Image (tube, rainbow, N blue to C red; front, side):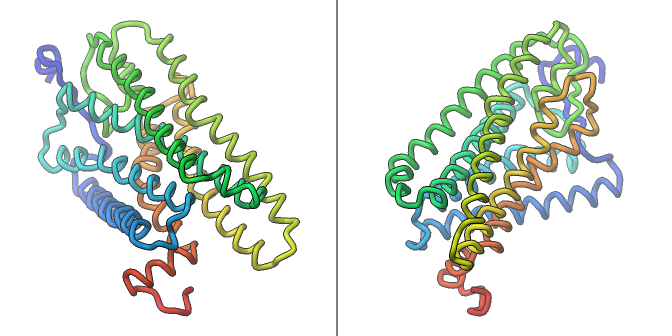
Length: 312
Protein backbone atom coordinates (compact mmCIF):
# COMPACT_ATOMS: atom_id res chain seq x y z
CA UNK A 1 0.00 0.00 0.00
CA UNK A 2 2.74 2.41 0.95
CA UNK A 3 4.56 1.73 -2.31
CA UNK A 4 1.37 2.41 -4.26
CA UNK A 5 0.88 5.68 -2.36
CA UNK A 6 4.35 6.92 -3.19
CA UNK A 7 4.38 6.09 -6.88
CA UNK A 8 0.82 7.04 -7.90
CA UNK A 9 -0.94 10.37 -8.24
CA UNK A 10 -4.28 8.73 -7.42
CA UNK A 11 -6.01 8.86 -4.05
CA UNK A 12 -7.59 6.30 -1.74
CA UNK A 13 -11.04 6.88 -0.22
CA UNK A 14 -11.23 5.06 3.10
CA UNK A 15 -15.02 5.11 2.89
CA UNK A 16 -17.91 5.43 5.31
CA UNK A 17 -18.60 1.85 6.41
CA UNK A 18 -16.44 -1.07 7.58
CA UNK A 19 -15.99 -3.97 5.16
CA UNK A 20 -18.25 -6.43 6.97
CA UNK A 21 -21.89 -7.54 7.11
CA UNK A 22 -22.93 -4.48 9.08
CA UNK A 23 -21.24 -2.23 6.55
CA UNK A 24 -22.99 -4.07 3.70
CA UNK A 25 -26.39 -3.65 5.37
CA UNK A 26 -25.79 0.08 5.88
CA UNK A 27 -24.60 0.39 2.29
CA UNK A 28 -27.82 -1.13 0.96
CA UNK A 29 -29.72 1.34 3.14
CA UNK A 30 -27.76 4.19 1.48
CA UNK A 31 -28.59 2.69 -1.93
CA UNK A 32 -32.28 2.71 -0.96
CA UNK A 33 -32.01 6.37 0.06
CA UNK A 34 -30.25 7.13 -3.24
CA UNK A 35 -33.11 5.47 -5.14
CA UNK A 36 -35.77 7.43 -3.21
CA UNK A 37 -33.87 10.69 -3.71
CA UNK A 38 -33.40 10.07 -7.45
CA UNK A 39 -37.05 9.17 -8.03
CA UNK A 40 -38.37 11.94 -5.77
CA UNK A 41 -36.30 14.75 -7.28
CA UNK A 42 -36.85 13.56 -10.85
CA UNK A 43 -40.60 13.36 -10.22
CA UNK A 44 -40.61 16.86 -8.73
CA UNK A 45 -38.81 18.31 -11.77
CA UNK A 46 -41.16 16.46 -14.14
CA UNK A 47 -44.26 17.50 -12.18
CA UNK A 48 -43.35 21.20 -12.12
CA UNK A 49 -42.60 21.10 -15.83
CA UNK A 50 -45.95 19.45 -16.68
CA UNK A 51 -48.45 21.24 -14.42
CA UNK A 52 -49.25 24.83 -15.52
CA UNK A 53 -50.47 25.67 -11.99
CA UNK A 54 -46.93 25.20 -10.71
CA UNK A 55 -45.39 27.56 -13.26
CA UNK A 56 -44.65 30.20 -10.62
CA UNK A 57 -41.34 31.58 -9.31
CA UNK A 58 -41.49 29.50 -6.11
CA UNK A 59 -41.88 26.22 -7.96
CA UNK A 60 -39.41 27.22 -10.66
CA UNK A 61 -36.84 27.68 -7.87
CA UNK A 62 -37.95 24.40 -6.33
CA UNK A 63 -37.34 22.55 -9.60
CA UNK A 64 -33.78 23.89 -9.61
CA UNK A 65 -33.35 22.74 -6.01
CA UNK A 66 -34.42 19.25 -7.08
CA UNK A 67 -31.96 19.32 -9.99
CA UNK A 68 -29.12 20.35 -7.67
CA UNK A 69 -30.04 17.64 -5.17
CA UNK A 70 -30.09 15.07 -7.96
CA UNK A 71 -26.58 16.02 -9.09
CA UNK A 72 -25.47 16.40 -5.47
CA UNK A 73 -26.26 12.84 -4.37
CA UNK A 74 -25.10 11.39 -7.70
CA UNK A 75 -21.66 12.94 -7.14
CA UNK A 76 -20.84 10.92 -4.03
CA UNK A 77 -23.02 7.82 -3.59
CA UNK A 78 -22.35 5.82 -6.81
CA UNK A 79 -18.56 5.99 -6.33
CA UNK A 80 -18.90 5.06 -2.66
CA UNK A 81 -21.07 2.04 -3.51
CA UNK A 82 -18.75 0.92 -6.33
CA UNK A 83 -15.67 1.12 -4.11
CA UNK A 84 -17.32 -0.86 -1.31
CA UNK A 85 -18.69 -3.64 -3.53
CA UNK A 86 -15.56 -3.94 -5.67
CA UNK A 87 -13.12 -3.69 -2.78
CA UNK A 88 -11.18 -1.05 -4.72
CA UNK A 89 -10.90 2.14 -2.72
CA UNK A 90 -8.92 4.12 -5.26
CA UNK A 91 -10.06 7.21 -7.15
CA UNK A 92 -8.05 8.78 -9.94
CA UNK A 93 -6.48 12.22 -9.61
CA UNK A 94 -8.82 13.61 -12.27
CA UNK A 95 -11.81 11.78 -10.80
CA UNK A 96 -11.10 13.26 -7.38
CA UNK A 97 -10.92 16.73 -8.90
CA UNK A 98 -14.21 16.26 -10.77
CA UNK A 99 -15.96 14.93 -7.69
CA UNK A 100 -14.69 17.82 -5.58
CA UNK A 101 -15.74 20.37 -8.21
CA UNK A 102 -19.31 19.10 -8.59
CA UNK A 103 -19.76 18.63 -4.86
CA UNK A 104 -18.61 22.18 -4.04
CA UNK A 105 -20.61 23.65 -6.94
CA UNK A 106 -23.83 22.04 -5.74
CA UNK A 107 -23.10 22.93 -2.10
CA UNK A 108 -22.55 26.63 -2.80
CA UNK A 109 -25.25 26.95 -5.47
CA UNK A 110 -27.86 25.28 -3.27
CA UNK A 111 -27.02 27.58 -0.39
CA UNK A 112 -27.61 30.62 -2.61
CA UNK A 113 -30.76 29.10 -4.11
CA UNK A 114 -32.27 28.51 -0.67
CA UNK A 115 -31.68 32.22 0.01
CA UNK A 116 -33.57 33.08 -3.18
CA UNK A 117 -36.45 30.83 -2.10
CA UNK A 118 -36.57 32.57 1.28
CA UNK A 119 -36.64 35.97 -0.45
CA UNK A 120 -39.47 34.74 -2.67
CA UNK A 121 -41.58 33.81 0.39
CA UNK A 122 -40.67 37.08 2.11
CA UNK A 123 -41.90 39.18 -0.82
CA UNK A 124 -45.00 37.01 -1.36
CA UNK A 125 -46.14 37.34 2.26
CA UNK A 126 -44.77 40.71 3.41
CA UNK A 127 -45.11 42.65 0.11
CA UNK A 128 -47.74 40.79 -1.96
CA UNK A 129 -48.58 43.81 -4.13
CA UNK A 130 -44.93 44.11 -5.20
CA UNK A 131 -44.51 40.39 -5.85
CA UNK A 132 -45.09 40.44 -9.66
CA UNK A 133 -42.37 43.10 -10.00
CA UNK A 134 -39.80 41.89 -7.47
CA UNK A 135 -40.16 38.24 -8.44
CA UNK A 136 -40.68 38.54 -12.17
CA UNK A 137 -39.69 35.73 -14.49
CA UNK A 138 -36.52 37.58 -15.46
CA UNK A 139 -35.56 38.15 -11.81
CA UNK A 140 -36.14 34.47 -11.10
CA UNK A 141 -33.90 33.46 -14.01
CA UNK A 142 -31.19 35.87 -12.81
CA UNK A 143 -31.31 34.35 -9.31
CA UNK A 144 -30.92 30.84 -10.68
CA UNK A 145 -28.14 31.67 -13.14
CA UNK A 146 -26.35 33.68 -10.46
CA UNK A 147 -26.49 30.74 -8.03
CA UNK A 148 -25.00 28.36 -10.60
CA UNK A 149 -22.27 30.77 -11.78
CA UNK A 150 -21.13 31.90 -8.32
CA UNK A 151 -21.16 28.34 -7.05
CA UNK A 152 -19.11 27.15 -10.02
CA UNK A 153 -16.51 29.93 -9.70
CA UNK A 154 -16.04 29.33 -5.98
CA UNK A 155 -15.83 25.58 -6.55
CA UNK A 156 -13.29 25.93 -9.34
CA UNK A 157 -10.99 28.04 -7.15
CA UNK A 158 -11.06 25.50 -4.30
CA UNK A 159 -10.63 22.51 -6.60
CA UNK A 160 -7.68 23.99 -8.51
CA UNK A 161 -5.94 24.82 -5.25
CA UNK A 162 -6.54 21.33 -3.83
CA UNK A 163 -5.14 19.64 -6.95
CA UNK A 164 -2.00 21.79 -6.90
CA UNK A 165 -1.08 21.09 -3.28
CA UNK A 166 2.04 18.89 -3.00
CA UNK A 167 1.06 15.69 -1.22
CA UNK A 168 4.09 14.03 0.32
CA UNK A 169 2.30 11.87 2.88
CA UNK A 170 -0.16 9.01 2.45
CA UNK A 171 -2.81 9.65 -0.21
CA UNK A 172 -5.50 7.91 1.85
CA UNK A 173 -8.40 10.37 2.34
CA UNK A 174 -10.35 9.55 5.49
CA UNK A 175 -13.72 10.25 3.90
CA UNK A 176 -16.19 8.70 1.45
CA UNK A 177 -15.64 11.39 -1.20
CA UNK A 178 -12.97 13.93 -2.14
CA UNK A 179 -13.77 16.63 0.39
CA UNK A 180 -11.06 19.30 0.24
CA UNK A 181 -10.75 19.82 4.04
CA UNK A 182 -10.25 16.06 4.41
CA UNK A 183 -7.39 16.26 1.88
CA UNK A 184 -5.50 19.05 3.66
CA UNK A 185 -3.96 16.84 6.41
CA UNK A 186 -2.18 14.92 3.61
CA UNK A 187 -0.38 18.03 2.34
CA UNK A 188 3.30 18.59 3.10
CA UNK A 189 2.97 22.38 3.23
CA UNK A 190 1.33 24.70 5.73
CA UNK A 191 -2.27 25.24 4.57
CA UNK A 192 -3.36 27.85 7.12
CA UNK A 193 -3.95 30.47 4.41
CA UNK A 194 -6.26 28.13 2.52
CA UNK A 195 -8.05 27.14 5.74
CA UNK A 196 -8.73 30.82 6.30
CA UNK A 197 -10.13 31.07 2.77
CA UNK A 198 -12.40 28.08 3.52
CA UNK A 199 -13.68 30.01 6.53
CA UNK A 200 -14.33 33.10 4.39
CA UNK A 201 -15.96 31.06 1.63
CA UNK A 202 -18.19 29.20 4.07
CA UNK A 203 -19.24 32.48 5.65
CA UNK A 204 -20.10 34.04 2.27
CA UNK A 205 -21.95 31.07 0.77
CA UNK A 206 -23.47 29.45 3.87
CA UNK A 207 -23.36 31.46 7.09
CA UNK A 208 -24.43 34.87 5.74
CA UNK A 209 -27.20 33.39 3.55
CA UNK A 210 -28.40 31.41 6.58
CA UNK A 211 -28.52 34.57 8.70
CA UNK A 212 -30.35 36.35 5.88
CA UNK A 213 -32.86 33.51 5.62
CA UNK A 214 -33.40 33.58 9.38
CA UNK A 215 -34.01 37.35 9.32
CA UNK A 216 -36.41 37.13 6.36
CA UNK A 217 -38.44 34.37 7.98
CA UNK A 218 -38.52 36.42 11.18
CA UNK A 219 -40.30 39.17 9.24
CA UNK A 220 -42.51 36.59 7.56
CA UNK A 221 -43.61 35.06 10.86
CA UNK A 222 -44.28 38.55 12.21
CA UNK A 223 -46.49 39.27 9.19
CA UNK A 224 -48.26 35.91 9.51
CA UNK A 225 -49.08 36.66 13.14
CA UNK A 226 -50.87 39.86 12.09
CA UNK A 227 -52.87 38.28 9.26
CA UNK A 228 -56.66 38.58 9.60
CA UNK A 229 -57.45 35.46 7.56
CA UNK A 230 -57.10 32.25 9.56
CA UNK A 231 -56.81 30.21 6.34
CA UNK A 232 -54.16 32.60 5.02
CA UNK A 233 -52.17 32.31 8.24
CA UNK A 234 -52.32 28.52 8.08
CA UNK A 235 -51.22 28.35 4.44
CA UNK A 236 -48.38 30.85 4.93
CA UNK A 237 -47.16 29.15 8.09
CA UNK A 238 -47.21 25.71 6.41
CA UNK A 239 -45.18 26.98 3.46
CA UNK A 240 -42.62 28.77 5.63
CA UNK A 241 -42.25 25.90 8.10
CA UNK A 242 -41.53 23.63 5.14
CA UNK A 243 -38.76 25.93 3.91
CA UNK A 244 -37.32 26.33 7.41
CA UNK A 245 -37.19 22.55 7.86
CA UNK A 246 -35.22 22.15 4.62
CA UNK A 247 -32.90 25.06 5.47
CA UNK A 248 -32.13 23.68 8.94
CA UNK A 249 -31.35 20.18 7.66
CA UNK A 250 -29.00 21.63 5.05
CA UNK A 251 -27.21 24.54 6.73
CA UNK A 252 -26.76 23.34 10.32
CA UNK A 253 -24.40 20.36 9.71
CA UNK A 254 -22.64 22.16 6.84
CA UNK A 255 -21.82 25.30 8.80
CA UNK A 256 -20.86 23.29 11.90
CA UNK A 257 -18.47 21.17 9.84
CA UNK A 258 -16.71 23.86 7.84
CA UNK A 259 -16.46 26.65 10.39
CA UNK A 260 -14.72 24.58 13.05
CA UNK A 261 -10.92 24.77 13.35
CA UNK A 262 -9.05 21.66 12.20
CA UNK A 263 -7.95 20.78 15.74
CA UNK A 264 -11.60 20.50 16.84
CA UNK A 265 -12.61 18.21 13.98
CA UNK A 266 -12.51 14.43 13.73
CA UNK A 267 -12.79 12.39 10.50
CA UNK A 268 -15.54 10.19 11.95
CA UNK A 269 -17.68 13.14 12.99
CA UNK A 270 -17.11 14.90 9.66
CA UNK A 271 -18.24 11.81 7.74
CA UNK A 272 -21.39 11.43 9.84
CA UNK A 273 -22.29 15.09 9.39
CA UNK A 274 -21.57 14.83 5.65
CA UNK A 275 -24.23 12.12 5.39
CA UNK A 276 -26.84 14.71 6.38
CA UNK A 277 -26.09 17.29 3.68
CA UNK A 278 -24.92 14.95 0.89
CA UNK A 279 -27.33 12.00 1.24
CA UNK A 280 -30.24 12.62 3.63
CA UNK A 281 -31.11 16.18 2.57
CA UNK A 282 -31.47 15.34 -1.18
CA UNK A 283 -33.87 12.55 -0.18
CA UNK A 284 -35.87 14.61 2.34
CA UNK A 285 -36.34 17.74 0.22
CA UNK A 286 -38.85 16.32 -2.31
CA UNK A 287 -40.67 14.43 0.47
CA UNK A 288 -41.01 17.53 2.65
CA UNK A 289 -42.07 19.78 -0.23
CA UNK A 290 -44.64 17.28 -1.52
CA UNK A 291 -46.28 15.93 1.64
CA UNK A 292 -46.57 19.38 3.26
CA UNK A 293 -47.74 21.27 0.18
CA UNK A 294 -51.35 21.03 -1.01
CA UNK A 295 -50.53 22.51 -4.42
CA UNK A 296 -47.91 19.81 -5.08
CA UNK A 297 -50.27 17.09 -3.79
CA UNK A 298 -52.98 18.41 -6.08
CA UNK A 299 -50.59 18.41 -9.04
CA UNK A 300 -49.61 14.81 -8.23
CA UNK A 301 -53.26 13.81 -8.29
CA UNK A 302 -53.88 15.58 -11.59
CA UNK A 303 -50.77 14.28 -13.34
CA UNK A 304 -50.18 10.89 -11.72
CA UNK A 305 -53.55 10.13 -10.04
CA UNK A 306 -51.90 8.82 -6.87
CA UNK A 307 -53.67 10.85 -4.16
CA UNK A 308 -57.32 10.77 -3.26
CA UNK A 309 -59.39 13.93 -3.10
CA UNK A 310 -59.60 13.96 0.68
CA UNK A 311 -55.83 14.61 0.90
CA UNK A 312 -56.21 17.82 -1.01
